[in-house]
Length: 85
Image 1 (cartoon, rainbow, N blue to C red):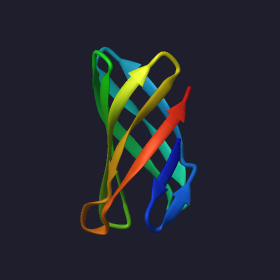
Image 2: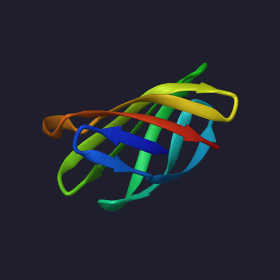
Image 3: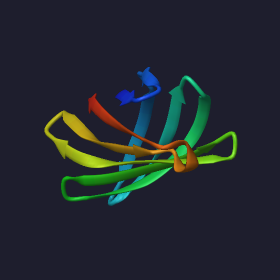
Image 4: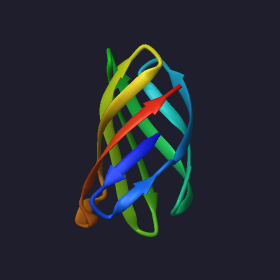
């Protein structure tokens, strides 16, 4: 993923496994690593993880091997992301 926020940018890596509509995996990025849970329905998906007490949610759409959407860092604000498989 490539995340762009007013406070800076980053390139976290997600390793995900899909089982039906359920997503599980890991996040590795600037803030450390964490287990990830989520779901997918059609072309829409949502990923959530908690790091240092902050729940982070990625919500977006998939088109082929690309994805894009928004990241919600709770009280720390929001950002946009793009990604490739």
